[in-house]
Every structure is written in C-alpha cells, then in structure tokens.
Amino acid sequence: ANVMLTSAAHQSGTDRIAEVVKQRGWQDELVVNVQGDEPFMPPSAIRQVVDLLEQAPQADIATLATPIEEDSEWHDPDCVKVVTDAQGFALIFSRAAIPFQRKVAGAARLRHIGIYAYRAASLQRMVAAPACALEQTESLEQLRAMWIGQRIIVAEAADKPPPGIDNEADLMAARARI
Image 1 (cartoon, one colour):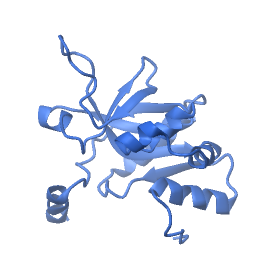
Image 2 (cartoon, helix red, strand yellow; image 1 turned 90 degrees about the vertical axis):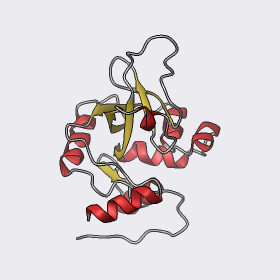
Image 3 (cartoon, rainbow, N blue to C red; image 1 turned 90 degrees about the horizontal axis):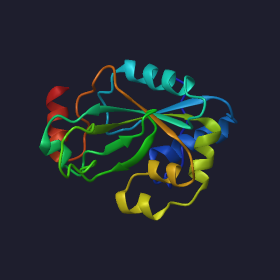
Image 4 (cartoon, rainbow, N blue to C red; image 1 turned 120 degrees about the horizontal axis):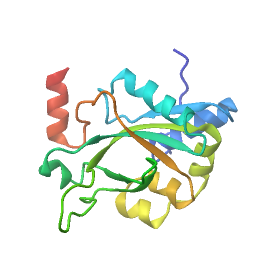
C-alpha cells in the first residue's frame, strides 16, 4: 500500500487527510475518510459515499446515516444524529436527540455514520477555516464545514454497519467480534 506518515500535531483524521491531499497536490480528486472508530465499515459504504458525491455536484461532502430504532440510542450523546432537508442535504448534526418530538413522532431519526467523501478542494477550505463555536460545543468537525457554507449530502447506508467504538463497552464488543 502507498502510505504517508502525517504530523502528530493534527487534532482529527480530517486534518490528517487534508495534509495528504495537500502533499499530493490533489485538487479535483474525491477523498474518503473512514473514521477510526468505525472499524467494521462495510466496503460497500465506501463506494456508496463516493457515488453519492459524484452524483451531487452541488455538494462539497457526502456521508451516510442509518435509522435510529432504539430510544436509548437516540438519547445517547455518543450517537451523532443528523437532520436533512428534502433533497438530502444536512441541516444539522448533533449529539442531542434531534429532531425533538414535541407532539407527534414521524420525522426521521437518523444516526450519522463516521464516513465522509470530500472534494479535495472543499476539504482544504474546511481545514483552513478556524473551528467555530458550534463545532467546539458539539465536538463535531462537520459543523465547521456547514458553518462556512459547505453543503453535506446524506444518504441512508445501503449496508448498515455494526456499531462504532465510542466507549469502553463498545471496545469490548468490538474485541469480541474480532
């Protein structure tokens, strides 16, 4: 495999990928980030997120989500939720239970999955921008992209990945799976 060692000073995997993009001089390429806490990501999800970005020229970033079926997951701050508009573009990501169901249930409850496809130039713009207050509050770097006006297209994952690793219990379950 062609690998590249990146700086230890990076705050996120997104920063590490941006360093590779810059070093390679990529401008028009699509770059995929499978986050380290999602070790069981189905390979089909990589193809799906690339296809999604290729089919949405107005999007800067593409990502995937799955329906939330359990209330415990919906209320879990380790589970990142996403709400989209009618065209599938992200309106907001949050660790809170969104959308809030005040009177009637029915709006989609979606769990964001830790996979992104970026346009190389969009990725560089994102990491060049300073972290915004919303990103720092939620500890979700995709909020910075939205803060600076980038659009994130979201689709439901065709193959639902197993849960990611967000805490010690998840780590024990992942070890048992391996």
